[in-house]
Image (cartoon, rainbow, N blue to C red; front, side):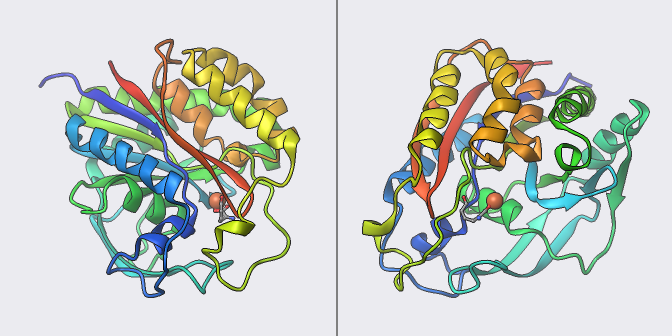
Length: 295
Ligand code: 2XP
Ligand code: FE2
């Protein structure tokens, strides 16, 4: 069998507002407009994903938080209604997704062999978290590519950020090995925002863009620092700064998803493509693409 390949990597954040503003048939609430710069950024990533022709999308979501080890979606099909617990007014989404169970099992097994706790999630009634759903919708609204869903093990909360970094490196090695053995073309995706300070008062109309902006200049400076390093192909420095960035910008990188992605891409030195950056409820969101890597 041929060696598998990572055909694309991406940072693909999951504000449910982006799905809401697009008005897809799966989502019940209707919007007039909103968050266009980020949605146009996703148009670019969608085109790149289609052009890369992945057979599987492997994604880590901060909102599937597991306290004992990493869990992997472990049934071929999940279908149901996802309601955002914080924004039920704008995200009530009927999802219907397919899982590449053999690849999920292979990553799970390789992770366990490296000494980390890892488990397949085989509950047919499990409700898929909205992070997974929003990122998958935004990169592939046709839902015609199976996924591997990986939970975010709360290492940064349970231990500390240094333990998180080493754990994510190990998980990334397991991910790379399993993809190589699978012989498949795979896209790897981290579903997280950058700075993550939320606004504290909400407007009556969610898509009222006069209220949408970053609320703390320090957070903006941190986001721009990390994005500039990505643009220059300096992923090792992004990793070196991850602890300070996560703590000082209250970033959603506490999930470990971005660290896992960069290690899975073998710490890229080629410039990342920034499709766009924008604020959602005050959080900083970048849609970023890295070239694929041979394994
Ligand atoms: O996904 C989250 O973490 C949210 N609080 C939803 C909204 C915007 C996120 O950046
Ligand atoms: Fe989130």
